[in-house]
Image (cartoon, rainbow, N blue to C red; front, side, top):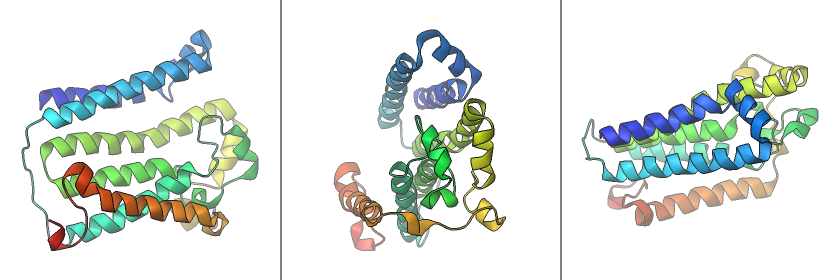
Length: 229
């Protein structure tokens, strides 16, 4: 378990200690943006592989068992997580690398809910898997991924503010990091109708594949039925 905990600390610390910080800015100035992205991506993949391997080797120490209805909660939550992730990935955003041009258009679709839909989808996915698994290794693995996603939203905000200045401030003024906050404060209006039909279909297909293949891939079915195991 110590090996898994160390892998989680390195994985989260590596990202938070570089991405979104002024160290990242200095590294880009020294080696250039393309070399930085390549080297950072390779290091990210390596640390993620280490985390997953350590999880597979970790002992299973149960902290809690499933409660009535937890499969239904997980299924509904995962549907929302997939929608956030797919719409976030398929919508040009100024929070993404190379997305500066999207600033001029303002928030689009799911960005009216949160300017970081993909990361909030990952955070929700991680939290739901912590709830559904109920054991220490899963808490460390999925908890670290959820924590990184949540802290990553603030890290990206800082990075984009340094890079884009007043232009970013204008985008941030009509969006929110926390989902639904800008809508509740009247700073944004719901714009989900701006998404194309294929984006919704892609989200539905991704959710369907995950639900159907989860048992074969990971040995546990997420279906909210007792017969699913």
